Length: 330
Image (cartoon, rainbow, N blue to C red; front, side, top):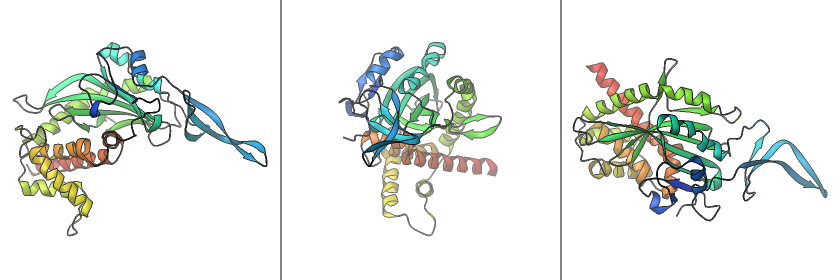
């Protein structure tokens, strides 16, 4: 089993409600638990300590100016070295972000935990919003908010808006849109700036419009029919093929897997996905979330923050391109 999910305490640093994820890792909680219970269950009761960097020269201890070790308060394990202007976001703050959203807007925490020894901390909450892709209501999608941060400079404090396709549990970020921008997939606060929880929450007011626009595109993708040859071309472009050059061996294996998933993955027999652009997108998202090489927790990190997420974004960008081309042609 991968060690990306933090096992520093001897137990997996993850709590969840509902169905057991990732082969039983983590502690299952009843619904509607307070933040304090989530902190304990997710093994996030520790905090980051900022300690001076010191070194030994000729028998004397010297202190390095403006450099600090970030260490866990429970084990004193060193997690990273940062400069003096680095703004800490404590594990407790990640969960506290949701306290008002849970009480005032009915959000429900569904998972929380830590990766890489505690270097990354995340929480995922359901907004309670569920919509359907097709008229037959066989393909529901739910809206979630993900908050994640790191203490090793690999990830800015990030609030991302994600859809979850219920029939297969595929995840796909959607863009937050406002009058000032074309859309961005997340709100990012670099660690040289203070994380303003209230300011970020105010920007969540844009989520309803963003969700509606995302659903319009999803439904258009479900109406966009694709022949198998066009599906193969879609995967070629997602995987970065530059004609006339063939795909490299790794990408060719991924292409073969996606073609198979396009026909047989969970949810692909639903009329909104069968033979459609939406089905092609979900072959990619299912591959990234559930099949791509690596342990389950490695895929979690990759699907949200790394190469898996980049692959899904490439698929959605290609889908948007096809939908835009189709609209322009009409």
